[in-house]
Amino acid sequence: MARGVAIAAGWAIDQIVGEPPVAVHPVAVFGRLMTAIERRTYRPTRRAGACHAALGLAIGAGTGFVMRHLIGSHAATTAAVAVSVAGRMLASEATTVLELIEDGDIGGARQRARGLVGRSTDDLDSGEVTRAVIESVAENTVDAVVAPLCWAAVAGAPGVLAHRAINTLDAMVGHRSERYERFGWTAARLDDIANYVPARVAASAVAVRVPARAVSVWRTVKRDAGVHPSPNGGVIEAAVAAALGIRLGGTNRYGDRIEERGVLGDGPLPTVADGHRAVRLTTAVGSLVAAVIAATSMIRSTRGTRR
Image (cartoon, rainbow, N blue to C red; front, side):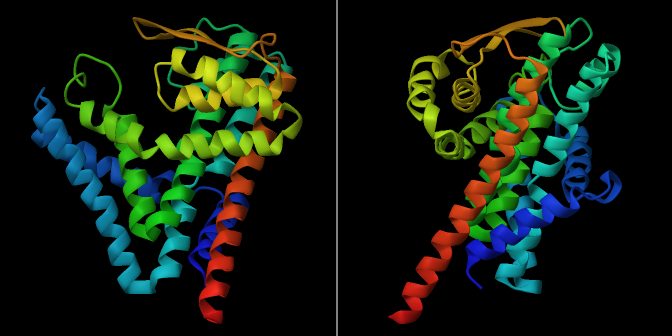
């Protein structure tokens, strides 16, 4: 079986089955392990953070190598993709928040959105919650869908699990705070590097899925992505904004810290209907990337057989 088919199978399992229970989810287990290690090894230095990130990366890649030895390369790739991709959960959580807004339960929407976004949601109105949902769906489509698929294509189970380790460490220690300013620096930079190409693959897939706005997508990415503090988040958020004809970005609050995210796109502020469109678009992006990887792998496999 071509590796691409194994990758597509893992993506399909996620779409059909969704996430394992948190108590036994491999990513959650990894997070608990790294938290326990951090308690013993933490120092407010980049060197300590680099050692922490290197250990997490080794655990992720090493697990992939062990899986490949135990159950075979393609089965390991399918399993690794299935537990690393979170497209169904992402779409479900975003839809739940949007439906709460539609029902007039802004308090419930703010509460539920906390599991999806990093910014403070206590004072957000319905429009700002909607913007937060769309931006999170866009950025996480790279982190939790397209990037795992791409790294699986490059290096199978070790690649996808190494990426998931990096991305999880970035979420745990890569944010700006007094504790993690230096300790989390390596994890944050590794995450930027690991998602650099996948973010641009995702933006390309957005343009393909909305061909009527493809030119606008690329113009907006070129013009606006750089104002975003993330070298990858700005690319996909600008692409989604242009594809939907809306405006994203603005001022976000993270606890006591205020962050200006710039303006992405030329349209009006997003509505709840735009939020549902964003969920459908990003789901379609994941489907397209998985299909292209599978088709490319099968074509290469067929050519190799003929030779």
